[in-house]
Length: 295
Image (cartoon, rainbow, N blue to C red; front, side):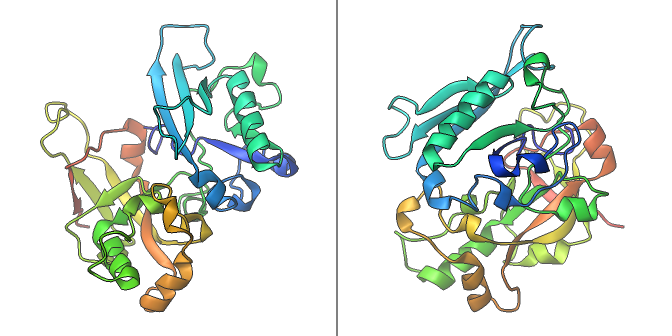
């Protein structure tokens, strides 16, 4: 719904020095250098294990217009989730929750940050409820802005076989202890059974999700359709694997250009929901198939 996955990149940690550049009531795309994120602090953030979930409540007087709690919990990755959380569970729908989150990360990185959200007056948040519409993403790309009339919302798709081939080029085919994972590249959707790099041939085309055998099969839903708009240029933000930070830092853009010069520093594609899908929403599940919609 809302043209993207629920709450995907809805909240962000904005450096205080960039505070004047963001207006919660009239948001626009900002470069990732303005935020505390995997691009600006990859090793620091790789030490954290986070969980985010949306919980429905019956509280009509809560912080969220959808009567939901948007709960963040953070643990030390090395100690695991059996240890006490470093932060949370904390509700990001509430201004107090965002203030506590900002304070935690300010202390962690040594630089003041704000926890911000769009469609909201962040200076007067105590008197407001979080909007029931998620219409702005703090994306690391301007692809949506350029290809969707200024809309920042995009869907990131990664081809598992492309990642596998890239991994073998770096570590060799026989390595069991060192390998790249698709999750390193922060995708929304991972596809398999597609030839390596074939996703680049889909740019400009529309693909449709075909439900597999899932609990949604009996529902009368409109198939989700995505228009592939661009390749994904990689940056330092994927230099550290958040699931395996012990592998150290890799210069992913240079390694891509070295091993696959025909593609340059690109891996993955961005998509946007077609109009009818973004309005009605829909479901995509593990095990679903994707097909190209003929013109």
